[in-house]
Image 1: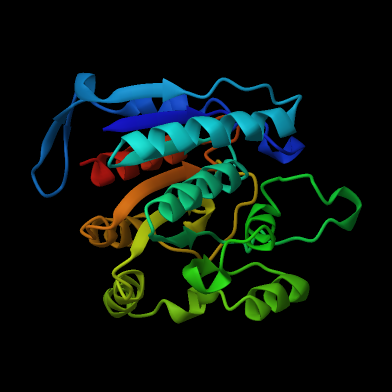
Image 2: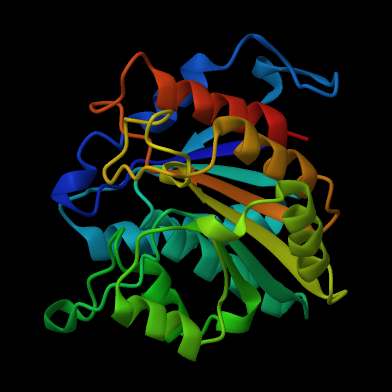
Length: 271
């Protein structure tokens, strides 16, 4: 199993997220025991890092894309650890390219409190953690192959963009019966036999009382248990190939809560 660190920080508010990959990996125990009883030795994990310069973000994204292409093509399952959520633009772009080469369809599930579809007309080519999903869809990723879970903070313009592009949204107010909703989401991800699944997790999808160490904390989100339940269920899907965990901010974290949750996520999706 390969874990790849992506220490990207695209905005001033992201400062502190680049070290989260190292922090999460350090938090993993020597012997990882999942809740269903599987045991994985930490020493057997393949740990890599994409070395980038946050002062040159276009070059950073080029490096992320090229490295992701190579690793996704040669590994059955990969976990990327950010860094901020802008990393997902390039990892998903690479994932879609691999899927096209294999005559498959890329399918994306995003856990996020925010839409990440802000429109910056003055900086059209500037990919950051507030606009990466908009840029991804504008650059060709089909919106009808995207599910956004946990949304509770978005502008009217972002909502209009998501609707126009047929993105399936499950706002927090929709997530009353978690088991039922998970059944529906799994069916959608598996509806097309050619779907290949990518799961992108912004840790701020979780309620801010549990994860204070993020750039944009939001109340009234998922509990840590609910997120883990979702991921344990989705991890059963045979077409799941890539997971990313982003927006853990070690400089804002309190009692290492976000880092511990990041490590727990990694433990439960390792195969």
